[in-house]
Image 1 (cartoon, rainbow, N blue to C red):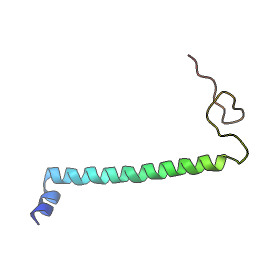
Image 2: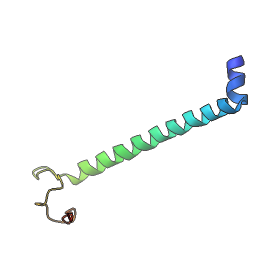
Image 3: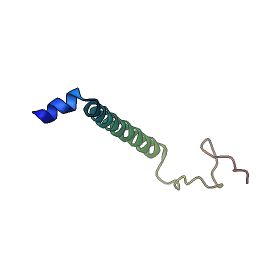
Image 4: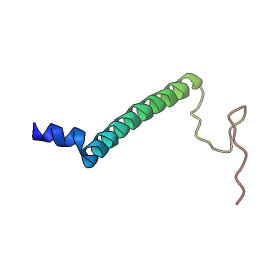
Length: 69
């Protein structure tokens, strides 16, 4: 019981709770972000086309301009 009292009443206990909660929120955010990016990539890839690797041979809307050196 002393553990819970220290966790919720001391400054270092409250900062620990805030840090853990913040990290858990970051985990949820990044999982949703990466899953959305994977779905987006899978939806844009059509069978029969080579994969989009960012090479200079690409054409169309997703083509990148060449980088200056």
